[in-house]
Length: 228
Image (cartoon, rainbow, N blue to C red; front, side, top):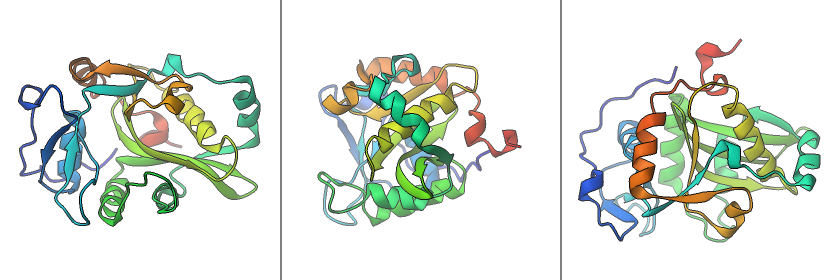
């Protein structure tokens, strides 16, 4: 089981305290493990949009991007690509985060503080990478925070065609391996993610759904006590 860190001393805003028209809901606090987990359990996540080493900016989108497992769209070409990759979990989490943080990528947002914070959560068993490998090379992958039936996806990357999409298919397959309600949070719906089945839900509906999935047991791939 993941290790529960020290409780955060910070009070993050609840649903009733958020501006109903603004995705940005708070600035401040820290990126310690306890703060991050408290944030995800309340539907918040950090994203650096200011200057380096500014206080964390916390978001809870008015319109949340989510992927219901049953809604995943796998095209014929993607289905053909899947068997050409090997899916691994947590064998190269730092490399996945670094690839997602590549400064040459457009709209890159992962800085050194975010990298360090999520690697600390990985060491505690809360952050996981799902990786697509081919011929001994990491070809693509994604990482995110797993709490009960929630997988809060943070970022994905590919070095070979369809590799990030294959990792997403792999993630959904892993989540299907355990009973209970499950949800993949992708923060915001984009046109690209919509082609994979991502939809939008309101902030209020997301919060209600979140309350129902947090208590679901982790899938075996993310729970070392269930692994052989």
